[in-house]
Length: 292
Ligand code: GRG
Image (cartoon, rainbow, N blue to C red; front, side, top):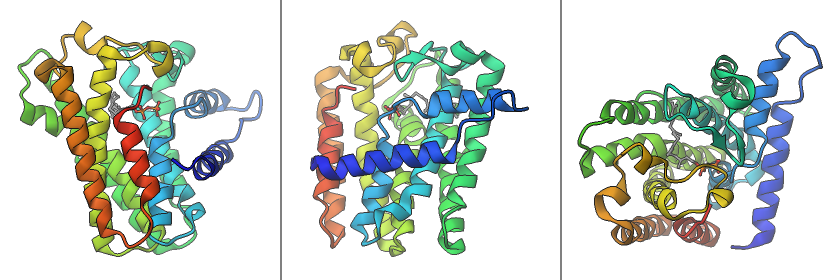
């Protein structure tokens, strides 16, 4: 992975996120919710999704900085989903990104509002894209992939499956929603920022399908084998809750084989792009063996 390019992406993403959500005036009327939003957003996630948006924009021949409003928007939706997912009425987790979950720091009601605020802010951010056509197209794609036909739908499948027998088909449908949908949003919005053709958007969707599934299955493996310190969240949560996932259904070895298979599919999708796709190739391979 060329570190200089990655470093440039990361620095720009962090700067753009902080600029999009400035510190509230002390004692201002809604300062507390802004503070809770910043607490969760600006505290060192891996920034996988905005990185994908920037890299796809560059691969499609655009200046990657153009994709920053879209990358930030996807990261805001992702952060809202983590805040809500950690609430006691959902997955009930108390650690996230290496610190107490939002509701542990600010209380449940404020965490709910912080999630709502980030979801709304995401669309404000996407719609700051300088040209109205791509701005609307990006926001529409994000809405479809984040809502009940995408990420929210995946979370619904997860909640409804609680305590029931889950087979591979249902598990896949759940992970397509919970994980693949937002990764697809990131890749596609990057292409939209560069004004890419529908054909390239479709290829970006195939890459996202491979990387997204691999990302989720690796997440299931890390829940068993990972180091909570490196991950910044508790491990062993799925087995403690007797939740079905790829590791409980297939075992670690077979699950990692699936990660590698899906990663191979993602790499194949890159062949449709005329530009230099080495960054996205290395990124997919790195995610397949990630430890955090
Ligand atoms: C509450 C609507 C709603 C949806 C929740 C995101 C989610 C759906 C649940 C969180 C748990 C989970 C297993 C999600 C799958 C996606 C995933 C692996 C998220 C973690 O993403 P990372 O590792 O996190 O990129 P960081 O903190 O690095 O950004």
